[in-house]
Amino acid sequence: MAERRLLILYGSQTGTAEDTAERIGREAKRRHFQCRVEALDSYDVANLINELLVVFVCATTGQGDPPDNMKMFWRFLFRKNLPPSSLCQMDYAVLGLGDSSYPKFNFVAKKLHKRVLQLGGNPLLPVALGDDQHDLGPDAVIDPWLLALWDKILALYPLPPGLEIISPDVRLPPKYTLHYLSEDSMHPDGDLLQPTAARAVPSELHPLAARMVSNQRVTAESHFQDVRLIEFDIVGSGITFSAGDVVMIQPQNCPEDVQQFCQLLRLDPDRSFLLKPTEPGTALPALLPQPCTIRHLVTHYLDISCVPRRSFFELLSYFSTNELEREKLQEFSSAQGQEELYSYCNRPRRTTLEALWDFPHTTSAIPPEYLLDLIPRIRPRAFSIASSLLAHPDRIQILVAVVRYKTRLSKPRRGLCSTWLASLNPEQGDVRVPLWVKKGGMKFPADPDTPVIMIGPGTGVAPFRAAIQERVAQGWKGNCLFFGCRQKSKDFYCQAEWEELVTKGFLTLFTAFSRDQEEKVYVQHRIQENRRLVWELLTSRSAHVYLAGNAKQMPAAVAEALQSVLQLEGGLSPSEAEKYLTALEQTQRFQSETWS
Image (tube, rainbow, N blue to C red; front, side, top):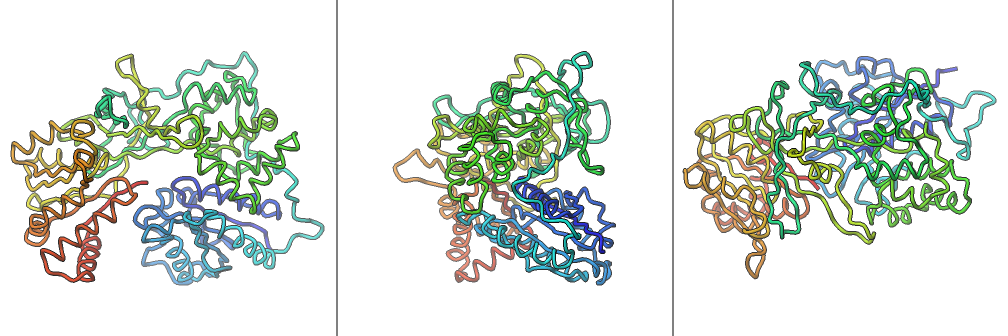
């Protein structure tokens, strides 16, 4: 009888691919497979040649890039010297998660499927392309694909004699068991973020507890949007960075939410516990101390403010003692109930904590050891670094728009990280924030004679502030910035700094204040108005163009403006202008970093 082992490897940026991989893992357990679910970069890729059955679940990020937790795997897989028969004993399937509003839709999944095929793998099914834009989200593709996948897998690895598929009515054991410690062995919850001793450069597993130096509002008090310029001290940390790099910040839940959560679930926040894996070989969560208090778990680890996924309601339904609540939870976790779930959860951006309020009988019956299966961990947030070490040694500055908006729910929605950062006041004592730095997507030219055209409306200007500071510190001119905001008097970030650089001849600045006149004026209009200069910089001086900011309509509008410059000034046809822009992208002379 062939050994029934299944490996599920995921590459996830926001947690959707991880959630889907865990779902496939649960379905495998119900079919009595020995199953491991691992992030691609935690898996020892040298073992891949021995694997017989693998399911890959991977997201595509940004401009068609692999997620951070599969970058090393990606580099290894595309090594030229891998023999074409390396994976000839592997049966595999690839499930992609993407967004069809981006040009490189599911690029990573398609490329991975093709590469494993080149290396001799045997595909069980065509690659599945989940799409965030579908009314029902990626599940519209995942649900039928999984049914087909299990048919294929069970044909190769039938159930052992005498065993049935474990019914969906049966609750699977938790990933970890939770062992409370007796009262006398408890420690008060000292903040576990002690300033780190000198060690390796800070990383996700060992963040720097950086001291916040200042937290300054840079929009007028009367302006609807609160934007902060925040500075951290990184002296002695070994952190280095250059313009275009990104700082990752690990946020935490606010004390009121933590208290509410503990009350709802009848948990004592000061109880200490140890975690033990249910199955040998399962790693403990890397970022949780052992022993740990409930308060630390809920404050620093469980993402109680995220919008819950379908898997949350599915697991919750098993704990329900109340028939009405159980029926609703089962509907939310069924394929037919996805539209209903979307309008309950995703459209109004209802949080996990708010959903728990709506199911009080079930919530009070949740066994604590299931918390880590039920609620995902808090993910770090990425911010473009807005300063240069050449201008501000031993410091990192970021520009943070505090996320706050209304939906049909009575309470305004708030961004977890930006709200937490804005609430910190370094003037009231020692404030520490866990952070580390990673390479960004944008690279600025090393040649002092290459001019840069930077288009950064709103907080999109952050990486360009770093680039301009870095270039000016070295005496480099040829800096051209297109900045846009609503009103000159309200949200013109770093106005004095830009104006001083203009006076000194280091910066050419074009501003678009969209609400300061009758008709709205945006950065794309300023690009068209200054098309002679843009054309001149591009063609005579081989300028590099950079774009950063919010990814709604802006990037397309800017691309269109650049194409019209090429047509009007260079006499190119529409298709030639498009080709020219694509060529600039391919040679890294046009780079963009946009976020939604």
